[in-house]
Length: 173
Image 1 (cartoon, rainbow, N blue to C red):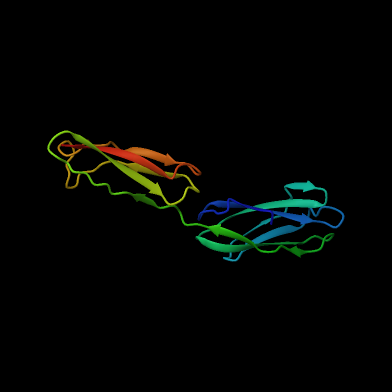
Image 2 (image 1 turned 135 degrees about the vertical axis):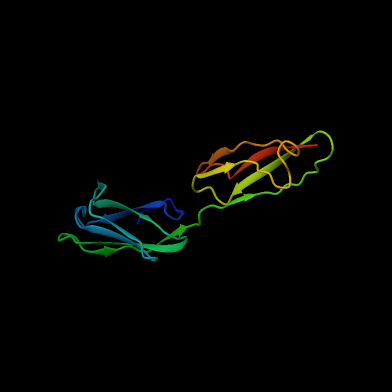
């Protein structure tokens, strides 16, 4: 196994697994490559995606259903011209989907002037895109009297991008 990308991955994300099979004198471009995870998921390939010298590269994809560490192994067989073989194990991590945390700033309303209160929304990791919608809603504070309402806004935090985003609410004094 020469690649398992992305690693780490998240549940339901397709992981592309590439396997090189080397022949003694010619590339083993027939037969089947099967990849199996220690958690039971598997994929297979019957067609090489690239051939270089005596190497045939095969690829398939697995979407893992749960988070956790697992071992990947590959098996090559089914060729009348080439011997069967098995790879060594490769570690692959599947991390949980990201979670969001909103901080809880405190502000004194006062009797005059406005105060800006900044909220930060932070995700647990940035391996995948995260979409969120944010808006203010009345509770013990009332729109107009106690604060300036924020209309619903949609945000996308892209994979590999920032881990947090900030929102500011004006508190009426």
